[in-house]
Structures are given as C-alpha cells and as structure tokens.
Length: 468
Image (cartoon, rainbow, N blue to C red; front, side, top):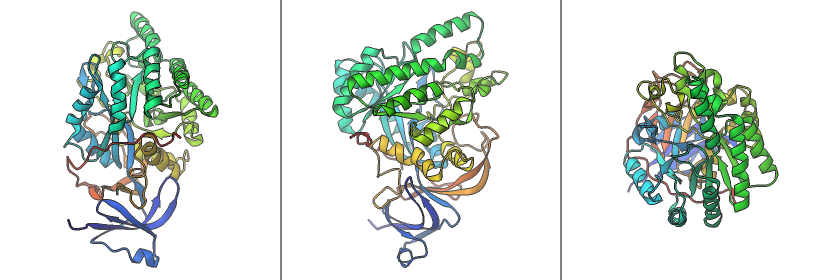
C-alpha cells in the first residue's frame, strides 16, 4: 500500500486539555505528528495534500454515545437508517456513534446484537460501536453479558420505564448490576419510575388531557429523581458503576451530585434538547408539541441552569443526543388524540456539536470543556480513548475543521437527517462544520459531502476508562 499523507496547517487545535496553534500531520488514517505552527518542525511536515485551517478550529471528531438508528418504537421505526443517520452525523462533525442493539423479551442478547450488526454493516459513513439494551434478565442473559464484554460491547442499558416493553424491576436491575460489577461492564440507566408514570398517564387520559404537553406533565421530575436515587442505591449495593442517560431534571442532577460527592462511580449524561428547549415547546399549538415528545421529557426552562452548572462542575460529564427521530407526518401523528401514543424521540445527531459551540459563544462552557463533553469524555466513558476523542499521535485521524465565525440557521430545509422537521427550526447559531475527516478520509470537504456508505467500520470498545 502507498502511504497517504495530509497536513492541516494554521488552525487552532483544541482538545479537552490543550489549545495550541499547530499543524497536524496525518498518515495512513492516523495522526502522525503535531508541531507548533510556523516553527521549523511544522515546516518539516510534508504531505501530498495540504488543508488550510487558518482562522479555524481543528477539533477531534465528535463521539455521540447515545443514538437509536432504525429503532422500533410504538408500532413504527426511527426515521434514520444507519446510512442516513451516520451521514447526518458526519455533516454535524460527529465521527463516531455508539448505538443501542436491542434484546427482545424471550430472545438472547446475541440475537439482538446480530440483528443490529446486520443493519449497520456496510451502511455507515462513520465508525460505530454498540451498547446492549437488556430487556430480559435471566441466567442465560447474565452469562451472555460476560461474553459481550470480551467482544467489545462493554455497556448495558436497562429501563426503569416502559412497563411491558423494556422495563426491568429492581431485582432484575440488581442482578445485571452484580454481573457488571464482576465483568467490568457499565450499566446505563433510563431512570424514570415507569410504573407510577403509567398510573398518571391513565388518569390524565381519563380526564381528557390528551395533548402533547401532558406527556411532560405526567412524567414528573420527581419520578426521574426518585428513579435516579434508586438506581444509585442499587448500584451501590451491587458494587457496580452507573451511567444515567438523558438527565433532564434539576432534582435528578442533585441525586447524581450527592452520589459523586460520596465518592461513588456514578456518571450522568444530558442532551442538547434539555439544554436548549423546554415545556414551552411541548405546549406549542396544533399538535406541534408532538415534535418535542421524548423521554425523559423536556422540563420547564428553570431546570436548564442546573444542567449547565452540572456540566461546568463535572457532575454531568457527557452530552449525547439520544437521536431517535420520527417524522411529524405519519409518525408523531400516531398520537393525535392520545399523547401516550406519540412515538418518543427527537432528531439531533447533526446539531449537537454546533449547539455546544453556541454554548461556548453564550458563555456556558469553555472551548476545552466543549471538546471534553462532546468528544473526549464519551470516548473514555465507552472505552474508545485515545483512538477516538482527541488529536494526538497514534489517534485515529477523526478531525473536524470548524469555522467559529460562520453563521448558520438550523432548519429542516437544510439538515441531512431523514426527518421532516427540525427541533431547532430557525435557531441562528455562530460556528459551523467546514471539513470532516474520518480516519483521514474526507467525509465532508468544505461543506460538500464526499463520504460514502461502508467507510465506517464497527469499533469494539474496552471497558469504561474512568473506573480503577
């Protein structure tokens, strides 16, 4: 094979730990060297292809640790396939996703994992890994967890919500946590008290409260906090680490903060929708609020301050998207007249990096924290670092040239997700992805798509790198 070399010159290289004006040499799909711009060392970096990043940021490709491509839910499927979803991710500066393979009740983990491999293989524009949703805890499942960890599927998601679908009771959760404590796996938790929520749903519908806004009212913040507390205590009993997904409520953040202050291996993720949207969106008239139905639900705007604070104090460590898009026409509309039948999920995989850069512009977080919560920490959390999540010699050349001054307006007209609305329609933001490399190959070149399906490869993961 002939060697292919690229040098990116003149940009501000930003990682979770450093900012330096440096030239980056890429060789055979990996970062080969960095040298401070304008120095003899930088001038010595030669390549067939040169990219000028003057005035731009050079950042690691984003790692989105929570997506649901082609996910079956509520009698329909998430609108993005692995092909369309990973292409949209690339457009947004994300170069690795970790999606969720699903075990159906009565079936093995292996069957679920094989089914998701079949969906993704040969279709992805960027690299991908899998978590495993465990819906049916039994002796066979528990043994399979050990095998999956050895194979590089090192995290397992359980649900305290959705009785009759994904729900696990406290005994099943405890057993899975005990297994993870032994095999090094990480338990990810959807923390909402689904049994109590179902009672509130039934009561709301009986009162004729059928509009999308009631989705947010029945899925109470206190029931997220209660479930978060219970998950933390079960993990403590099992001696297992815990990662709580899509934290939306200030009361749940308080539970995580307390656990971390006590020295527990408890981690929290939030998502852009909770940072930028609120129950005001769920209350939009003419059923428009259905576009914003996801679980955990959007909260009143005052919860946002606690989420931003959690991200600054590291009580929340990761921002993922929970990308699970359903079209307004024909999919979200399944819930007209009954909010409980609206498919739960929102599009976002393309918007995350840009929205978090806007948070830098707005003064919520620093530039390095942007890279930390969107690239480095998810890579470490899910056993992908330093292959992913940083720009350093030996790392995969998953690199984004980001123009911090360009303005863009988010819109369904211009996004690349396979969904007929944008959750951020008309939002004006500063900063835009210009060029994206995945393992050194240009996927987006100066705002033109130059990638291809099948470039992205399955990436096995080591165990969580925050555990001693």
